Image 1 (cartoon, rainbow, N blue to C red):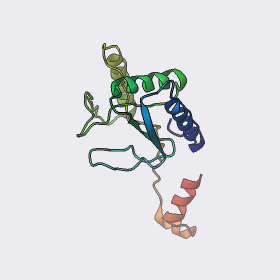
Image 2: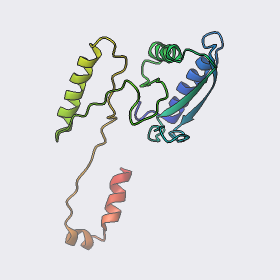
Image 3: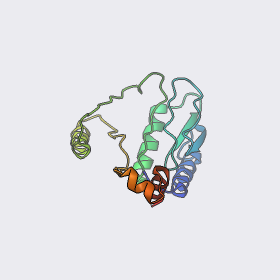
Length: 173
């Protein structure tokens, strides 16, 4: 989740790794590697790892020859849903191209962020009711508050302040 400490992300990835390493539950998994915070490597042009952030992890799972990959993806999805309810995870097949196979991307635009969030939640609810749709999510994370300061340059300079000093003070608050 956005804002989660890196230690929580590490614990979550360790739990998922334990699940993937269990030969009784995942006999068709050969190996896996996880990248925490870095977004992972771009080892093939068609791969777009997530934007690096301490609350994000990227896991690549290698399967044994002849494995039912669709079954593995569903098994991982079910494990995450039942044991990690606060995790926003998107197990999927590796695909080449601009978007993942079978994925639809919708964009809602406008000037009012609160209305956009409201419309997005309404759309997510409607899509979740459509049979066959397995993942519905948005890419908006935590709202970052912004402060716009109008400064009187003459008074600011008379007080011995600079734009840079004021900006650093606000950022550290």
